[in-house]
Each structure stands twice: as C-alpha cells, then as structure tokens.
Image (cartoon, rainbow, N blue to C red; front, side, top):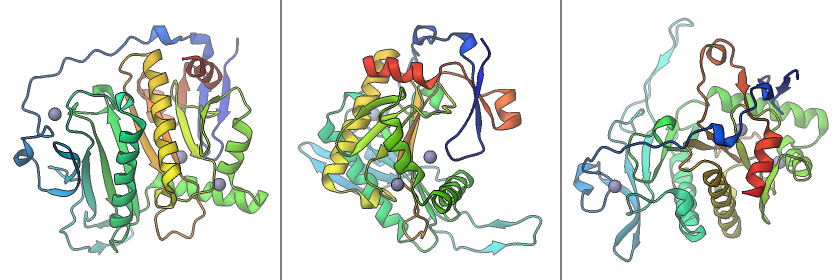
Length: 322
Ligand SMILES: [Zn+2]
Ligand SMILES: [Zn+2]
Ligand SMILES: [Zn+2]
C-alpha cells in the first residue's frame, strides 16, 4: 500500500501517514523510567528549595496549587527591555516570565488520576496567570504547557506545568494565526469552528462534551496526536466561562485516561495555542496533546515534515474504544 501525504488544516506542514509500517499501540512499549531518589523541591515541606511562591490556592493541608518562578528562568521579569536591531544580528533582552505551576502536593499522581474538579482548579490557575502575565507591557504571548515523562523532556516527576510569557509572538503561533486569518478572509468562517463542525462526525472523532471536542487531526504529526477545541469561538483561555473550564477539565481527563489505557504512563507534551490578550487576531483557542512515542530524526529536522506510523483514523478508533 502506498502511503498518504497529508497537509495540515492551516499550515504548509506535511505529514506522511506511513501506515505501511503497521504500528499498533502494542508495538509501543510502556515507558518505565526509574526515578532517582532525590529530595523533591515540589513536595510540601521543601518550599525553601524553590524560589518564593507567586500565587497559591490553599487546601486542607497547606497548599493545593503553588505557582513559583522557575529556578533557572528562560526569561527574566526583572530585566529592562532593550533591543539591538542592525538587520543582521538582531537581538533583544530576554525579558518575560517563566513560572512553574506545582499542581498538587501529592508527588506521584498522574494528571489523568486527578478528579475533574482538581483539573478544573489547575485550569483556573492557568487562566488567572494568563490574565496577570498578559498585562505586562513586554509580554506578547503566553505559552502554557505540560511535559509528562522523561521522553517528553520532563526532569521532575512531581505533577507540574509551566508557563513562559515571551516578548515576541513565536513563529508557530504567528503562522497559525496568519493562516486562520487567511481562511477567514476567503471563507468568511473560522477554520477551527469548521474543524469542530466537520470532525465531530468524522472517523477522527475521539470525545466530546457540551463545550469541547477532542479529535485526532487529519495530518497528525505523531501517533495519537489529539486536539481539544472549544465548540464556542473563544480566542484565549481568558474567555472561558466556569462551565467551560469544567468541560475542558473533563475532556482533558477523558483523553489522557484513554491514552493511558492504550499505553501505560504515556509520555506527552500538551500546550495551549491561543491569541495574545490584546491581539486583534480572531484566533480560536485549542489544546494540542502530542504523545512522545516516535523520535524526530534527520528527515523531520531537515524538512519540518513528519513521518507518522499511525493514521489519525486508527488512533481515534482506538482512543474512542479505550
Ligand atoms: Zn514531589
Ligand atoms: Zn472559531
Ligand atoms: Zn495549534
């Protein structure tokens, strides 16, 4: 059988759906990582090992969620913004924010093992930090993301997410925003609203509730890639209402539970794509989950195109039935 080359809904990004390799979930071995026994800086009682608390939600026994500055911040909130543009070696000061959301006092729980109520609390914190950080005049984009598992670049297993607020609009965000504007000009519709409408009834459907749809995108770049999209047209997380935050927690939990049923302790990255707070761009927020089961090697790095051994139709079917 000849493989199919698929183009992303928006981007000029291609994925070769290499079903001739016939990868099945069982071909991907569960990832067992032995954790080194270290004193965990995110565990209750070790707060003095981390930078001071920026924000917290109190629980029955101390804090339930703690937001701190990253110990080695990629961008610094204290710096003065200066730029040096000579048209060749352009650079500017690394201002911005780099925060860690310690999601729970419990060290060894996975996110899919939390209740919907608990995940909603984490989403509340994402929203709160997004609004606060967006008000910084140097900030142009707020990246909210989570790495789970060593393969996904996570060095500390204690449940946590990260937030990096940048003084520039990152390339991928700009590309997605521009492509969705172009689609809107051409079709007088939002591409993400169209994706929701069409993919709900497709073979790539995974899960839905009142406010969110979960589906495997047509040109998935990795096995089991899943997007969770708001059904209502919402630009960014600041626009989510209470019930929508609960529904996002429900959808996120449902998808992660399904993924873990396929592959125990599946490593993944998830992140929110959304418009900056002050942006005039009518982007549509969505959360992308990318399991880390394959290695991006020479071809991917050479071309920015991908080889994905599991078709999104097979991935969705397996996730639906999990
Ligand atoms: Zn811990
Ligand atoms: Zn939309
Ligand atoms: Zn996106």
